[in-house]
Length: 350
Image (tube, rainbow, N blue to C red; front, side, top):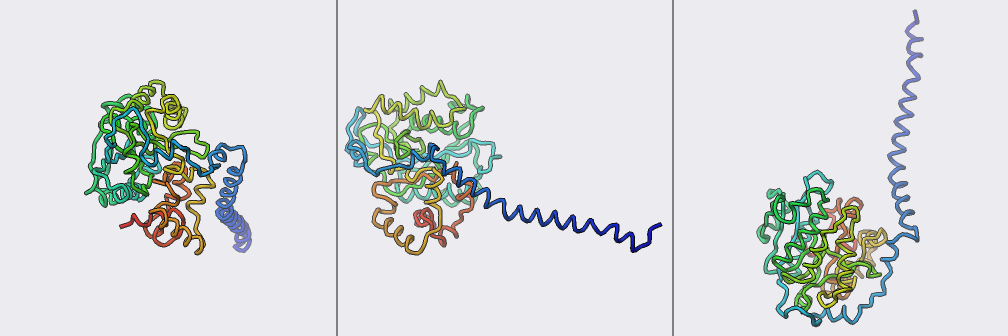
């Protein structure tokens, strides 16, 4: 039989082993996040990535784009203005996604539309919605809630689609029936759309990317029953859910090139600049020096609330920016931390 002292010696080695494991776990906790961040940065530094093509932009609008911005483009449509009614879509998911709660960013988007666009009506179209949500309650008095039965209409045959794709087709159906302005709930309106609502062409959209490789559906202005929207909806018969942005970005560009008389296309700066690229998101959300913050505030003052001349809205690209930036945002951070995004949206806080 072992003596008590020998039994203690026999158990002793277990503690150093446990201490080593805890120390290694602590090292991994400290080292892994910066290593992961570095790997992401190195990946996005790859010169062959498509995102570098969209980052190149000369900030020059074409003659047609200038006419569209001024509301002077003629077209095949009537000359009555597009209705200044703003449509948003929410709640086409089952609520289990990481970003499935109506939150601060959605609130900012609706607040910006109310203050910058001064619409006659704001409609929030939904299939599921927690009407007791605190952020929704802050804007609810100024919003008309419109329920869409998932078993009826265009949503009926799209149960297998991802929520983003279901929203893609629903927005077109809404604009075909009612006309107006559609905006994603991560778009911040910065200046009045009054000029572009007057365009004689039935539809107005903005180019995405400095290379103008697409026309993005995060912001659409349209008269009801427009031929462009009808063509676009008709082509959803060939929808391929594995091709993420063909029907939402590349297809409308193709239709615009074939039927330029039906659509006004704006320069990338109008709605979709800076882009969704890693470099551009970092540009918008990194904290600024005191001198840079002063320059940003001067730019916003000189451009009526926009970062650039002729910028009407900013798409926050939540699909790319949610985890690294938007998820952490609060009103307090927007008020007290100077990034380009925070300074730009600060005026929309209550």
